[in-house]
Length: 332
Length: 200
Image (cartoon, rainbow over all chains, first blue to last red; front, side):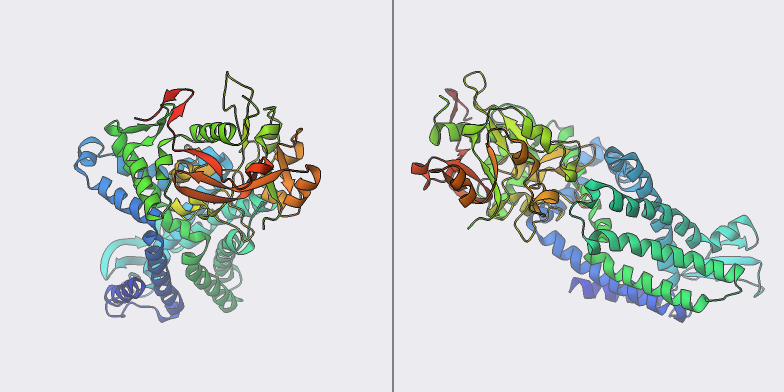
């Protein structure tokens, strides 16, 4: 239902955004159709995901924290800061490894750039028009409205027309590093699955390389092999877009949940609502977070939610003590 | 009937930390140990307890159930894997929900890590690192039959009681033969520790 509604809305946006299909490029139809499938898949998968007890409660609490008066009063900069450091610059990846952070940044910004160009272009939202018909003066329009004018022979013009090439240049080294790591690093290769871990990297590299080859063909080969490359590129992009909701790429959609979670904890910490272990007094988490988890556990019929009030070490020690007392008394 | 798994016998544990060191060599979390070795009655006795992931079967992996990001995968052979690095958001739900106190969290890296039964080894029929190096057999890897052939008269229990809830696990504990019918106490409800009332 939600998937169909979102796809319907997207189709409506495509029709209206392309000025009743006047700006729609029919050669890009497969990309636009894949975009609609992507919207359906993401909406469907997202709905299923946030319906599960753990995600559902966190989803609500994240939004509640965002719109709470406390958040606006005490931490108005917290959300933009978290979005920038966590979602944009992925600081947490640096704590895992600097090389992984650098490679992921290349992939991330490359994909962001590619998405910002590809989606509006294939939906007919972007148009590049020239008053003279042959340039070099061009106008970039969004939904028919002029955004900027530029000279196609200038540096800006070169960047405008090679945006996807630049994205490919960013993505290729990043994805190659991860592919190399998956082959060489024993930690990464443990338990990895071909379809889940390797296919996404291969897909990114195929899309980027075939995209660059299209430019290579038009500049150096006078268009030789262009049609074949265009079909290959299109197939790679279409399959990747359709794969996004069902594989590793879904983490792109899931990641923002971390910001909701952090905001929820951050807001509680501002009010010093820290929950201490009932046995040793060490802080476990924020009080609302422990209560939220207990609620999740009750939803799932995990009836030992009281146990969430003890830190991991105390749980182990208490279990050890119970074993010594009731099962094997040999030590006493 | 359980297949090859780890059997924990705290009665044999001498607290030597060999398992802790060996665990650092597991390929899935190289350099970091995921096994816990606790001295449960410190100052009173030399008792110690090694804790690996118990790979809960019923309810299936509470850590995975409470995970808001679907990051914890349970393999077809019942091994509860550590969090998928791309999905884990570092919320610590798994850490606080696990009744055995197993998962660890790196808040800086926003990543949960835990014992995954040395999947890189056990998937190929090899014993996990901890069981390989344990000098006293407190951590034994094999089948119940293999354990009993080596240690006649022992029994194992794979069910733990937390308050009114029973949790059946893929990893089992050694119990005296006359107490085999007992589920192993999980430590809840907690009333008194070393003579001190811990209730609020």
